[in-house]
Image 1 (cartoon, rainbow, N blue to C red):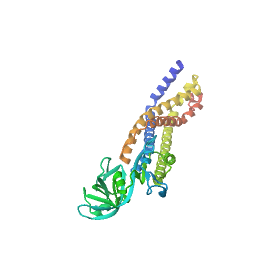
Image 2: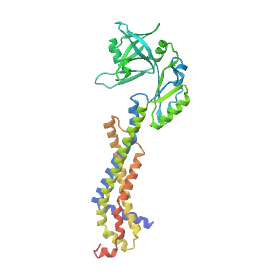
Image 3: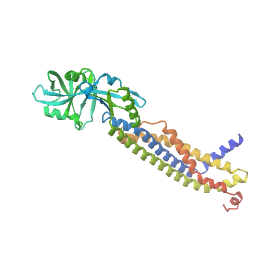
Image 4: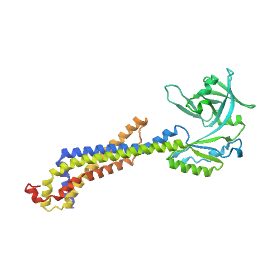
Length: 383
């Protein structure tokens, strides 16, 4: 106990002796910890953010009939959508069903008519896009007499908001109100979207669907494993992952992760060099102290332990302060880059503090030179 009390008493004196240089070391460690924590938090949050952004483009897994000749008009039973597992460790799977057909479409007020692809969707999303305003999507499950027009179909029909449309296939007719317009730059612009029940009545295919579209969260490997399991669950369907989404997500994340990891390594190396330069000056100033310690019987191992404890305390203090600032910095950077603040990850804090302590101890290498000091040389002024 007396040795332990003396040890920490000497450490406190060492920390109070060279306040200017130790403040520079603490500042460097705090800055390195802040940047490290910010980049690590962004790296972990980037996977979640990329997944969210890619899912905004649409489904990443599609189920279609495996063999059109063996099913009713190339469709699947609607019950297949209920067989899809939706609870995954990475999040909830969003499921939507669709039935597509060709129908004659006319505007009731003007009489203009054309043929168009009609998609019966469940759930049906009403999307209104106007110049200068963000997209607005609202799902409505109970309304069946409304429809969403692609902008190119709307131009052909000269249809206005709330116009009444008549859709007909053979002798079957359905009417709907133009609730909104959709402009995506894709095939949706040439399509009319109605509710799934209305499309099934129009096509005379009750309880049948053409496709099942899924938005599956998770990494590309997890999605591929989910696709394989889904193929076993629904053998009558052909499960197709949209590879340009999954592979593009994996490629972008691997590049972002590699850049951030390399940057973290570079920051830690630069922090270590800065601390090492300051530690070299501290070692030169403490030659007389070390000589005195060894002259009164201090073992070299104990002397080095004093300085390593000092470096560890500096690393712990700088890591605790810098990591907290870094997580706040990552939230601001996430807001600036993605428009949404990055979520603070608890695992980042201890990792950043531990890395800062390791850098501080490794940067204390110049203090090992003090182990070779001879007390007699110090007192004669030769060291």
